[in-house]
Amino acid sequence: MNPLGSTTRPTLIFDGDCAFCTSTARFTKRWVDRRDRYEVRPWQELDLESVGLSADDCEAAAQFVTASGSIRSGHRAIASAATHGAYGWRPVGYLIMAPGVSRVAARAYTWVAAHRHQLPGGTAACAAPRRG
Image 1: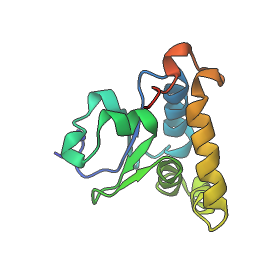
Image 2: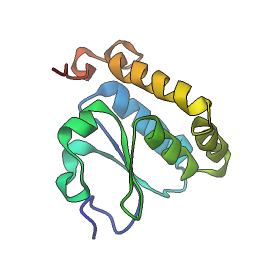
Image 3: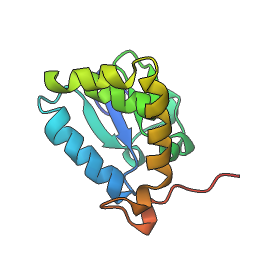
Image 4: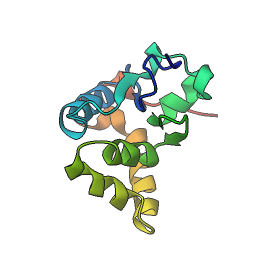
């Protein structure tokens, strides 16, 4: 059993206190990972330190921990969820990481993370903590 609660399965980690993130995680589990290829879990239920993550990391961005223990954050986590998911979603993940597109995807992810409380399904509780 690994520290994230599964055997050696990859895990997409999201903020379970955020309604927008929870809705997005539900969508991912239902449509992107229909064959249950990886875990989709809120960070609040996991032993983060054992895999090199902190609560601050997980509040700032989604995280994807591969079966080998590599960590991908933000848009890279979303791309990894797609490339590990159903075959129809895999090209989306590769596109997100393509040169040029990755830079735009990173900016888009940063904007969404900063405004998640204003997006459909979001609430005031979804607002990312202010840093500094």
